[in-house]
Amino acid sequence: MSFVPYTPQSDFSIHNLPYGIFSLQSDGRHRIGVAIGDHVVDVSAISELFTGDVLSRNRNVFDKPVLNDFMALGRSAWSEARQTLQRLLSSQEGIIRDNASLQAKALIPMDKVMMHLPANIGDYTDFYSSKEHATNVGTMFRGPENALMPNWVHLPVGYHGRASSVVVSGTAIHRPCGQTRPKDGSCMKPPVFGPCRLLDFELEMAFLAGPGNDLGQRISMDKAEDHIFGMVLMNDWSARDIQKWEYVPLGPFLGKNFGTTISPWVVPMAALEPFKVASPVQDPVPLPYLRHSDPYSFDINLQTGIKVPGMETPSTVCQSNHKYLYWTMKQQLVHHSVTGCNIQPGDLLASGTISGKTPDSYGSMLELSWRGTKPLTLSDGSTRKFLADGDEVVMSGYCQGDGHRVGFGECSGRVLPALLS
Image (cartoon, rainbow, N blue to C red; front, side, top):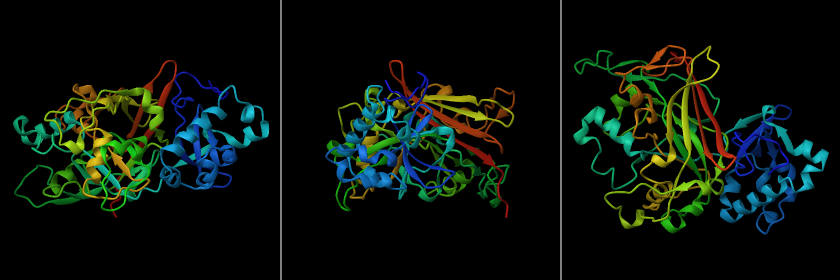
């Protein structure tokens, strides 16, 4: 138990303690925070209390405006920090609890802070790791007999995204403009330029990398966990009509580069450890470098809602789970570095859309409306094939423990009209 009060439904229990970057209106300085209940712990205000072997020599990482340097220290530092924070926030420990001035300085109400991107994201890679999602999309465009491409069951397919347009939850996204086929879909007419008509969300999760590897060196499967710091929710906004016209032969480009939203709180892997579940059976068995026998899927309940102007709460359109993914985070990371590609602290590696077997678990409007042929009815009676201007997409996720949650908060963004000039 913690001396900081929170309800059993709070995402931010003492079992969680996610990291983020926040600022106050009074000074605007970006600093490292840890969420607990409805409060943020200003870690820089208590940095002298980190007296372990690693962090006593590296307290300066807590004065940084991003998490990169802390993430680069590795698992021993992460473990030491977590143990210290859990002790300091425990109901049994009085260092902060019984010091009114320190408590006022270190514990800040969450409604008083502004959240920022948790790291300098040097590179961003998006995978395609849900078999159900890949099968659904392949079925729509190639038919069920050719739904999965031949390589899909042999390796984690991915592409390099645009790190500069990764934004923190709450950032509005303008509807993108680009080239598309004419509205009648004619293959005989030239493309037209204008606002995207088929704007979509993709329910994903992503992890931030810790220590990197040198260029030319691989990350082996038995060392992969040493390089995975923690996880966030992610919305990979997608312009389906722009994507359809451009993606052959080199894949996503402008249909994906205009915005990617992540949740501000990074849940450490240690907090997710109790929620590991068996990974899906992979058939055929992957090549040796991609094999691992230990479970590395996670029972994370995921939900996506659409909030139309005037709604008090979002209308739920999707309920999914991280455990549905076919390729694990360790496999994604190992495959990414198998060529000797150098991963760096703060790199963002995303899962791809997370869809389950049932229609209510599909993680994109493309699937939920089945390419626009089955409009969704929202709680206010309005219908959607794809996203409309003014819609706010709200994603959430949590693991359910015994009387507590380990959650991610929200990953949200509102659609603004296209900028036409």
